[in-house]
Length: 234
Image 1 (cartoon, rainbow, N blue to C red):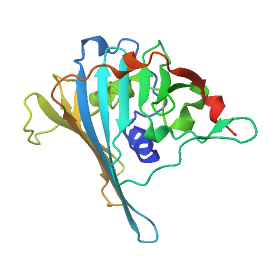
Image 2 (image 1 turned 90 degrees about the vertical axis):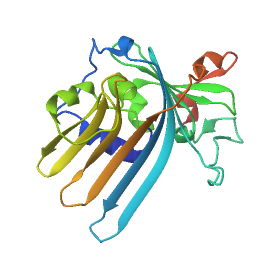
Image 3 (image 1 turned 90 degrees about the horizontal axis):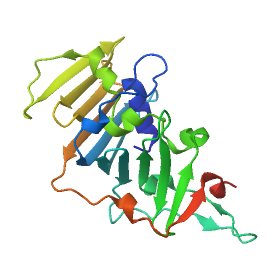
Image 4 (image 1 turned 180 degrees about the horizontal axis):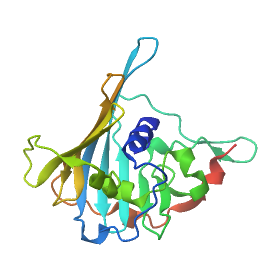
């Protein structure tokens, strides 16, 4: 999840105050998942303009690893890739949104890296630069798509669900609501909705489990160059 819209959504779903990673989160017992995720947002600006955005990602969840990648349509405009400075070969313009993101469980602070298949390079991101690549530093939210402790603050509702074992939970505070369809067996939200009663914003995440098990792509990075985030700064 790599855009400012997603960052805002995650912020609205966070508990009040600073949220730290849960040391005993049941990640080890959560099943492996291959997911297709669709993000949608709609915002009404003060000048009366309605803005909508929609994008998709794929995600692989394995013990200790979360791999996510943006789905780029074939007709999408090509983004300018990072390029070489004529004076000294200095790289800059890291387009992290278009690169697969790999989050690795590593104690209190997870490790984060992006993979540039075109340049055959792995770019390591230090924790001090997480904000610059739209990562909040939470292993739990990377692994579960939300902080599991949020569920304890939400009320189970009678809203119908067509997925066995999945139940709707919701909460509201000062006219802002959050609704989560949580799959107990797979330990993942199937849908996340947030918005306000005034209708000025609405955000939705749809999660679909894909059949089959994709081989772990992080095991196929032998021979890739190791880069630092600082290599891409001007």
